[in-house]
Image (cartoon, rainbow, N blue to C red; front, side, top):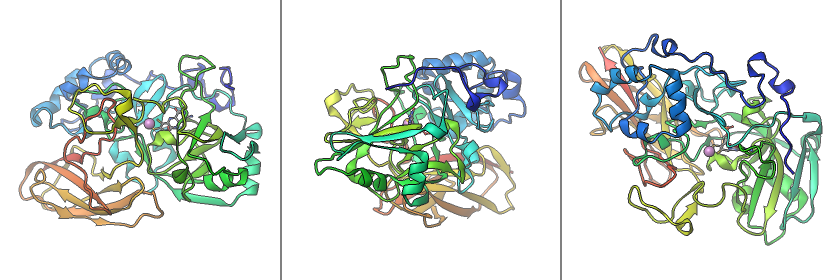
Length: 457
Ligand SMILES: Nc1nc2c(c(=O)[nH]1)N[C@H]1C(S)=C(S)[C@@H](COP(=O)(O)O)O[C@H]1N2
Ligand SMILES: [Mo]
């Protein structure tokens, strides 16, 4: 049963958030803010291709901002079209999403979707304010922590059982893990032909520390029948249409994946309550898989005797062609397969793209790398468009399914314009591609190398 939309209560009490559906204030957006302090490298820019395929809501949003296009031309002479790193596609639009940094880039305000510029992901543990927000529907307007109930049921559950937050906290052992959540559509902005949906560049990824109980412990407490195939989640958010009979999203994972130790039913992020936009008071955290499997505002888990058939499980959502297709192809629903683990990927979080650097000074570069269910074994850096590579130092993950930090020091052969490229390789020897891999209709799984610009002076 879905809750009906009610007026915002204490959780959303701040004056700027007085409307029941608007958690974003647009008042800070104006062309002055965007252009102030924008050097030629910091200028927001997108390729013509990306502009052509931006979602309608984004286009409207940008139009509302005014003079964005002027700033775009500042950068374009520096890079051949099609070679513009997605890092440059980010604007510096300030946002005021409840609990979130002003530096997050809002891609859509209904539902709220906002990504984190790469340099704001520099911390080893992503801060709550800097974690991206990906909402498919409207977040719950009332959250009653004391009366929150998690129900576990389904054809393959031995019984139907309910837990309050206190039950969960008292009955089961607590575990903390740093777990990487990356939206399946992260990197979509680079698709050509473009894909509809939020035009994520690089910032729909985060790796905070989560605390809660093991999903497996709770499922086992309920009892799992031998015929269990999948689990599915349901959250308290509502469908964007306001239709209470529809779910915003209800996805899941195969039972074998669900039973892995690192999956949590979490109530805490970085030792504090999970931010409202990230699923307070309870969420699933399934590290390494598309973050769409990590249900927010978690109210119910079903243990299924078939592949879960909740909202956004069916094609084309979170599916890619089972066999590779030519860019722009139409793909039949039957030929689309559910995305499992996310592919190997890395991010350069320092320096910020567009900084200047003195040639005679040491140049430090660092970031994170992750590889779905696997570990990353190597990261390589190039400053000559991939002609030569230098190996970076990489740390072990703090636990399975946590991203890994890497760092390196670089020398530049001359002054001038350079791009720093980073390429991670997973423990099976699979590396990131330099350019967009396997085109797919919805723009998922772009794990092409991240590139940042440096002007050496
Ligand atoms: N209930 C609920 N859970 C959800 C979603 C949602 O819209 N509603 N979005 C999913 C998707 S597509 C992603 S990428 C992640 C985003 O998590 P975040 O918003 O905490 O960053 O949450 C997932 N879980
Ligand atoms: Mo997502």
